[in-house]
Length: 265
Image 1 (cartoon, one colour):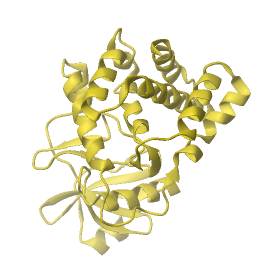
Image 2 (cartoon, rainbow, N blue to C red; image 1 turned 90 degrees about the horizontal axis):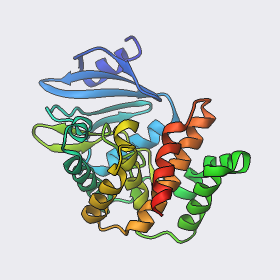
Image 3 (cartoon, rainbow, N blue to C red; image 1 turned 120 degrees about the vertical axis):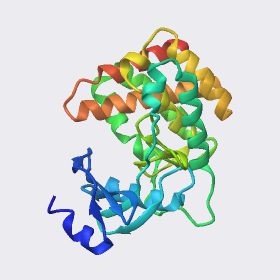
């Protein structure tokens, strides 16, 4: 808790819950006056890059940035009663996917200001997949080959959120659905939609017919071409698996979804 104290004092905040950890940051629910907010302290450059992108969004499709300095980020806290993951698991999968597509569309719109210079080009983002393909072949090599084809001739280049999924789009009772935790990438917009098919959990994502059905919903809602989006899904799953493998964990979840998507190609 002591890590947050300088920022609580600086920005006139009071704690409004227990602190918790994310993969690359520490967070504390707070209030500034009567308004709920979230204080986040970055522990990696990726988090700082994401904070800069969140500020660039200007509250359109994402939570508003209230303050930002050094490793600290104070942002609007979404306070609502709905959750996309629960919707997906309880008969509202199509609606949850349409909401994700709507939010992604809002985030992909250009802004008046230039985007942050720290954005990572998508080919660089995929570097870990090339490493895995060289070492392990198999599905990694397939995904790397497809990724190379996509990245050599990109379409619809936009500023990407980089991690759009059911738990990174939150409901606010006043402002609707808002994204959090962007990664700060730039490239073809189909990349952001691929992750939707891998969530909210492996059981849902690999249920018979689910990937094909949600692919149809995504292509209809976002105006994407079916085969190219399947290619992005294979590429994304390969990248996700390579990240998991490099962390020393079993990438079976991403590989199973990759297999389903590859069968549809």
